[in-house]
Length: 267
Image (cartoon, rainbow, N blue to C red; front, side, top):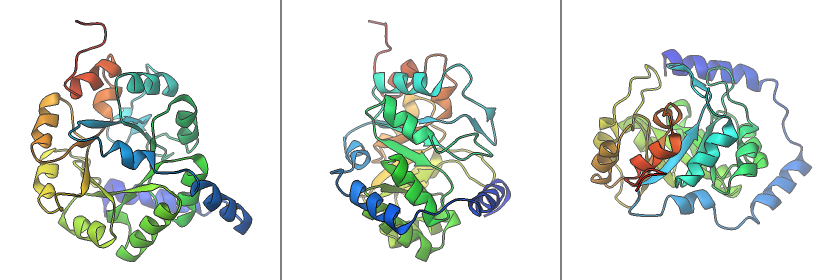
């Protein structure tokens, strides 16, 4: 862990010193409410083979690209994503480097019927409780920043709260950790979080280390239907796409293009 990733985690750790922890009564109510919600919608959405299943992302900024979401409000972008057939919405809620905020989860749940993945840098249990309270259907857990013991614990806690843990990996050692933690969904990040360099070859390289039946999501660097086709041939049916959608003139048409469909308003 180094460079940008280390800075983000250090900043997150400082912020969490001031975060309020839920009481025992609040936790009991939270577990009761979450366990009565039925089957997890995010997990269902990723089982729509042969795909491609697109998790469309909303983020306001990134350390490498600066400000991103300028032409649309969060609600407008989510509406376009849902109209174009996204299987789920991802929201980046980290505050300092990505300009997000935790209430993004609730706002998307209020304006969309799609399941919501919350992406943040999770290092404490309190963040999982907060995600559950906000209504997140899935939560990103980054293998690189967690010990195996902590990752196992977080995966189990998410599942107890009816949250799908999406465990993100970037190399072979991350994969071993994710498999030992019995992650139900593994996201292969094509972006190196230390340098922010991107290549979809990382999914192709790492897919062979995972069981064929494992649900895999390819994350970052997907810009064309040709990228999708290449990864479908590797047995990957789920894709998390952010910047290429957010920066497109018509994000809904870009999403349709990535799905191999016809643009809205064309024949």
